[in-house]
Length: 254
Image (cartoon, rainbow, N blue to C red; front, side):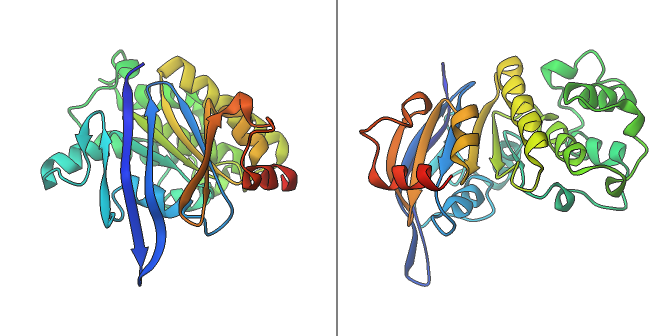
């Protein structure tokens, strides 16, 4: 496997209050890394840094070997394509005035010359492109002319995933993507993400406080507390006695 994301000694503080402290980790191509921790542990701040919505005080982040923060503005815009996000509340992800078709095509319209490998056979047609994306996430093509409020929570999250993979990102950040969904729908979304990871070779940073979800989908797990990485281990070793006491505490309350 090749390295997709490299986070090196990243620190961030607000008003002299440390939020992230010397964070370092890697994500390989086709790997899902779970990031767990209680509210206020720094998970969202880390996600914002990776999405270039904020900047670290120290350290660097590389995507496919290229620095996010040292890049010039034009290159930084191109690098943004390689990192996409799926948020907790799918309703907040869409403009209510746009149809499913319009929302789905927004990212591709912003990069008109780019053709993802899995869309090359349909890229000449926006309608066929949108239909293929919907099919890939298990949605009916009949939904294209509907509006977000006409979709269920699970359908909206599938749509958000379809849009997020449309530019063939190197890394997909999933920030509590199942937290607002019913248990049965949560399982469907987790299975979908796992399937896309395998079929597209997608790398995922799966941010959650739900240890069960993290253990199911992740290859490797990072535990964050008060801005520090306290524990890291293969997901298969989550229940081992050698785990950090804080990890055991998170497991016990899941």
